[in-house]
Image (cartoon, rainbow, N blue to C red; front, side, top):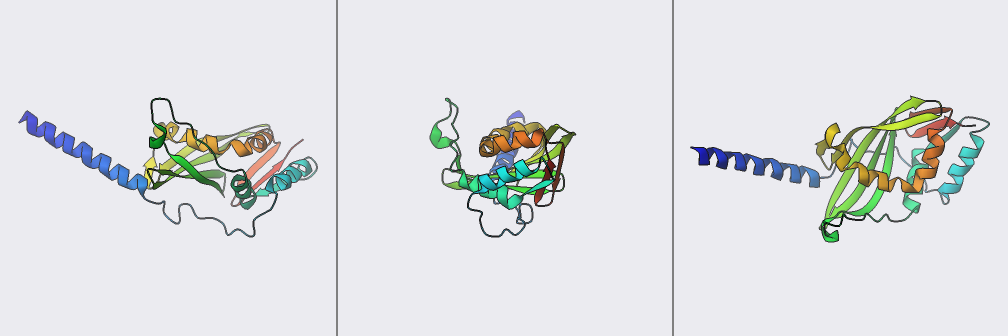
Length: 192
């Protein structure tokens, strides 16, 4: 009797792990990560964003989702270092990253590959704080179609944070903004 119960338990665990692996390897739903239609790519997005930051000292400024994504595209590839106990061949390789701006939220998506299979890490952050003390708090996440609950978000956060390094200077400016608002497709702000 005991061995049958143990066998049934092992079977259930294997089924759950198999379903989780299949969901993680599936592409995210089309509606979950859809973009606002973007126009032509901006040639020097860093300079345009810098100009917006400078003008935000005098008038309210906006940075579009397309501008942020163009900056991420132009920043080059990101090398994720695997921990010493994990072989680099068994560690995901970065492919691309982009953001989706919603009302009060930012969803960062990182496309990667592992053993030739595509993976998509996605994490949603909610804007919190007040003048000169803004922050983005992790709210939810997913790997492919596998939802990640809040206690397990630290599993994907390092991948998302590594992909935000090209925009870290701009993020520090926004953290210290007097007024900061995220709306669908845009970040509105004023600074001193």
